[in-house]
Image 1: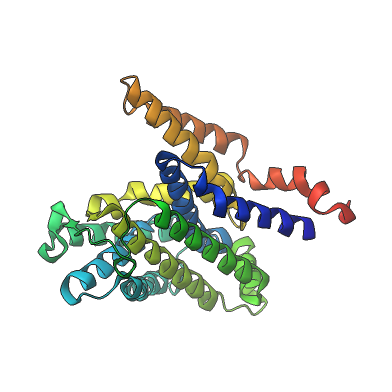
Image 2: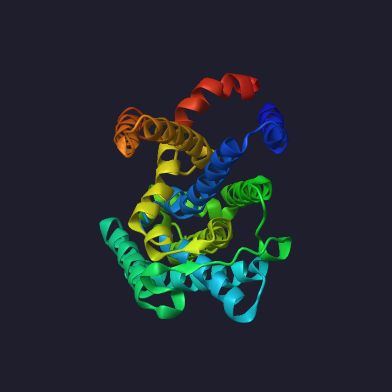
Length: 322
């Protein structure tokens, strides 16, 4: 285990120094890798550790983005504060979804349908509210400065996205080692058995969805102040929810490093093929290749890449257990 922490420390040191040799294009790619890894980690807290599948996580991202942006526009409140207001609002919505789903014992496809329904309701509300820009969305004024979470160039966004990712890793690792984390895994493996042993399954599932929604919403503010535009079809779409879940599925659900590994495996090839095919006059074809790669990954690694990596690397990181 000591070797693993040393290795992860070296990886972190490399990532901290990497911007010194990266072009602007590659820095943008790494920002996307960190961003989607963070979102995947947030989703992983709910689905990876409790087994309750959500297909509406873009709702929390949108709530965080729109809330912090409106607070800036109306009250001039810095996004660094607005992001936590948005996160609390997203948590309230998540708890509402969780109460309806968990209190009435809805599992599997029925819980999935609830998350999809709420996400679609949120998207439609944003589409028809003039204060949220309706279908045109909100265009955010570019006013560079730390206070506004807006910067010239990608370097600050690189470190903010990396910071978010590190934050999520620490939170998930602490959760994994805690009593609550063990209860969540027990719920995932056999909820009825966990309940029969005295685990308050409702309480811990509500904890998981609240934490997942809160952390997801934080990324909404980051995205809004990096892109300078919000629209319901971009930040609250089903497509984005699917993008969020692909990373932990490919990397390995219920693991700390799975969403990160999945983000590297998916984002890099996706961006390479998109850029190359656009240059040769085949825009959009990268999505076909992307789809085949994902199908192959799910077919050959149904539990994700991490179980395979654990088996291959275990002799090196844990030699005493061999």
